[in-house]
Length: 285
Image (cartoon, one colour):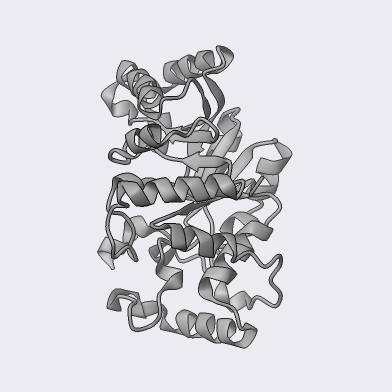
């Protein structure tokens, strides 16, 4: 069983700052799924809002995988959210989900959320959902969830320059609560894999960090992809590392990239600057 999980947003949408090829063609998606199966990657991450990603996965056939998907926003009402879960099952052509995540963390503030959560737990009791959880963006959101909810699964942003959840102790708390942790954004939407020529000018504000990053990679004779995937894989509190895949070749590179453990990561590489770490803020740079 691989610690890697297959992210499929690119199956349904043209997504990612470093994605220059667009949505994954159906033939290539077949190749990716087949390679994942061959290499014991047992978890697929998708969402109701990822275009036709769920339908494509269902057409390919993913019964051998643990499927994690995400809800529609509660803004549409509890009935519509429950209907979207049922539609996800139909599109995926599966009878049950390994995990269902509340996709919009702000839904917890809505009056109807308590009722929705109880309904989802009923689906869990019926065996339709194995684990219920949340998709988060900031450490403070993880703190709020730990203080207010019992949950089984969480998806969080994590990468080699973002150690906020380690420093803040949230990862340890999640492990102590037996919460399954899935890390996403391990390449920071591809930003960590870009060279200085391809990186957009709006990220020049962090030029000193990029210089240190590339110097450290060169000194250690490893690629940005190797360093990024190895670091996230090495964190014991993380159960799965979710990577968005655009081609079979890319998945093969990622599968071969894990080197075990990294040494001598400069403390100066870590940043807590949310303008850089939160892609939602990039449009304002």
